[in-house]
Image (tube, rainbow, N blue to C red; front, top):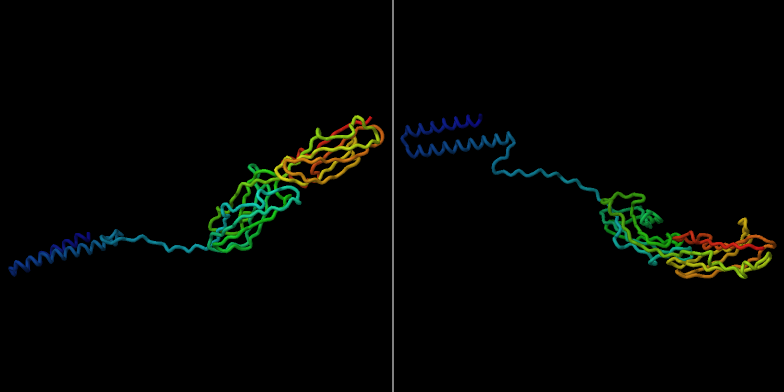
Length: 314
């Protein structure tokens, strides 16, 4: 509607200018008047077009509208704790499990803070896992402080009797997970793991290896005899063990016992024995060998540590 009104006003103005110049019979003036009228009409139409475009929120010709940019919110500076890949190790390598007297093993890993703030009072956990068991054995270390963009070596000394028995494990290191106490910029890079072989003993004794001298068939009440048997270490590490050798009667009552302390290398064996005197009279008796009777060593197979041999006295 506005454009129509503008057009009508422009045409009337042109006719008026033409009439005035015609009255003066000025050809050049007529031309100038015509050009001025057209220029006036064009300016008027453009101006009104700009007004309409602004009213309708349409883009103005020749003007590029930039997208509105929101002012970014300043994110808080947070730490980012991680375990450096390949830093997990043990000393000695491989570690040796068994009796406490067999020595200590140091577990170690490098912990990094990749973030922009200090991390304080968090826990690092060393965890032995098997293919079927998670957290088979774990150890905790507290880190009081780790500045931004820095690292430190975390270690834990573990006795041989605190290690798992001989076998292959995944030694997993977890930082700030159990428990989670530090808010980080990345909570998904706090663990690493390394395949670890643990060496250790596995003791065995067999009933078929028990010897009695003189022969059990010749013994009578009141006789003294000796017995011996080889104790074997079928494991992958040297072991120190206590052995109990007992004489018992048919009711299971222990009549006498002897104790021996042995150290057997991996794959080796050692004979152990004792001397007993039988009670007077007749009866049925037996000798029992208990390897690692006080469980100083955790072994892969605990079911082959006891052997017995029976013999009658007539």
